[in-house]
Image (cartoon, rainbow, N blue to C red; front, side, top):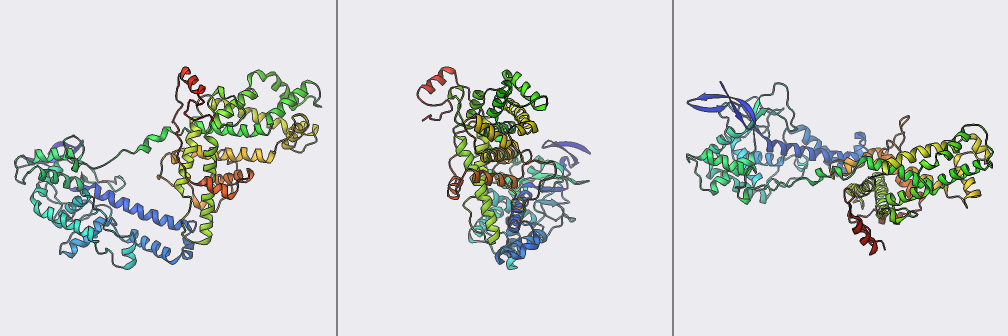
Length: 601
């Protein structure tokens, strides 16, 4: 017994009559297997969507409209009763059976049968060396490959219609029947070439342990050769175009070259034989949204809203009154804080520096535009996301109450898109000093809240809580108080929203990869676990509640909310700050254009 390396794997080989052949017992047509896995996933996704209409409670399925209940029942029968549900596979089984052929239509799980002639969506066994799909199973694989190669993979069946009608598989559509007849003609005309080419493909195939559709390897998995039915058909087509015959003495060499072209290993393939397989651009988007940047922006936004409440100015005024001896405080924790706050004033950010930071991060008025580029896009993107979440949550809740599958003006992808836009915007403006400033502001705010909550301070102003202290000092010393309920609601709601964006950065960056919101959680929110704060670990229900509170406290009407929720073009948002020479920046500023390309008008 010798060892031969094939396709990067070692497989045992035997020498018979001077010809070395690989001894893999099983054939694994991976494109057939993956097609079945994908179809099963589509069916499961549809079942999940129907089940979410009753909050995931199977006991409530009877409350669904009759047509939805019938569809759900049929799909469940399909996935549980049929070992293979790939429509193309089932269509070939139906057609070949009606023509007196007998491919195995009910193979055993999990993945390979007990007899040499068993097929399971791409798995074959054979006693021949090399193993060739036996009899009618070979015809099925070849027809499958031809149809996939020519992009005729849909027989036109709804997912559940065959099960519901009790006539599964269904008759073929006219377009698919014509494509299948053409595939039969090609295989019949070049049967010998298909057989001989297969032997070459087997010799070139990678060999390894038997895998299921998800790539899992079971214990004591036998060796299988990994092939593609579509590549088999593509190689034969390329050879036919070159005029190669089944008895060509250089068939193995020419088939190897055609296989390399079909697999994209060289540039010699004719354009018609090259499959269109574009790169996934979203896989490159993981750097667009930086979680750490969003976490920094959460702290800065929280501080900015409390700045509007005058919490920093109130503290500064208390320090000033303390210095002048006008604050009735003696020895104690409040006095210690005020004294240390006064002594450390040179190490803290000034009000001007804080407002410059707020303007750069969120475009809040009050900062010096010459100290950085204000984030002018934030407010629109922010309102679009909040409105989209609120509208979507309200729609799915109302839809659940009405038990009707009505089209919704805002769908989950609009929520994802608006979330990605605002997250990318916050990430871009969260570079540089943002994180370090956020940590300082967090410590400063914690100390200020502790001071204002001190009993001596509250007693000095006849107040019961810190908000009354702030209102009293602002009214008496700072020219008037702000709406504390509005400011602190915006602060807490905004912090929850930004933290949710940070926690879901990967989902936002990969459209269509996962559900953006858990509808069951939104419809039936559970109490928070002990010790868990929504500002540090927000759930989807916390996000919806924060968006609704923000819109309510800012006086946003339902009409305005629905208008903001509508999709819009994504603004030009670079993934990182762009370095612009100072002379170019000055020239842009001179003509009224900021360095990020936005007009200042």
